[in-house]
Image (cartoon, rainbow, N blue to C red; front, side, top):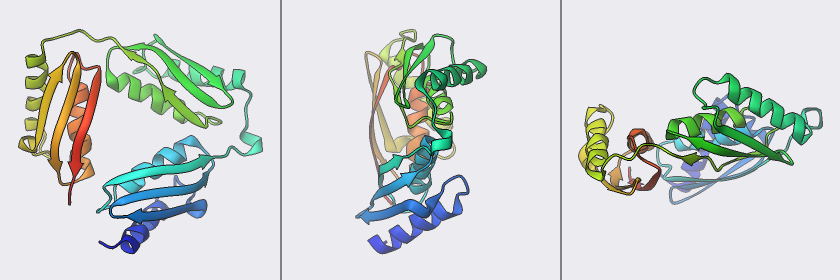
Length: 216
């Protein structure tokens, strides 16, 4: 697919998504690498734009240079915004009470501890959706139990084998002190995300090094 074709496809995908105001987003492509530039009105739109671009066939990576500009009527002072973020985190049953948030000029930093990566992901997702947030920095520490490296590798490979969308043989798994390293080549971003999700779901995982290549 040519760069021009890829740019048109990503632009069409952004236009198709009603959650994203694509009018001020410029798309450029260079050999499978897509760059998004311009402005959006919320941090959630910035995240959605990345996901939209990754869905397009031929996209190997996305560089999101979008700037979040909060409209005046949606601007909040930091104390009020922190209160809303904490309230949203508290109301989500997946987010543990050990997670806290700080706010500086609309930029949210999540701190505290969690047992699972999905809890960190949920906290980041919830905070990103609060009106007035311009960025989210996830500094939540993972403190899960520590099974053996062999148990972790085995559980991840079994999870991959059970997944109908994923060719488990195409991804290698290495485990060391809670860090999982994934290598290999998959045929789509969906397969890539499934493999990474399987790694994060294993007990004892505190970090995932993603070396998986997407090749069409």
